[in-house]
Image (tube, rainbow, N blue to C red):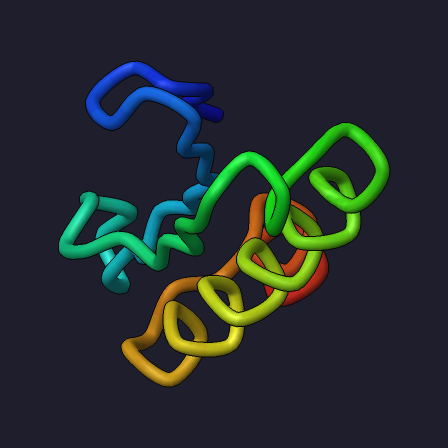
Length: 72
């Protein structure tokens, strides 16, 4: 989570996109002004970014540690 680190008054959240081997290949980010991304909605937006990143990661062949245990 960044808050005004690059752009004063800005904020953002991000989540990693992983490939089958578990390596980082990309990231999903949501950025906006401090009025758009604030303490009231930051966790909600982070959850959405994480869910999106997980969906893309799964399409790229990544499995969570829990899915790996279940399939072995």
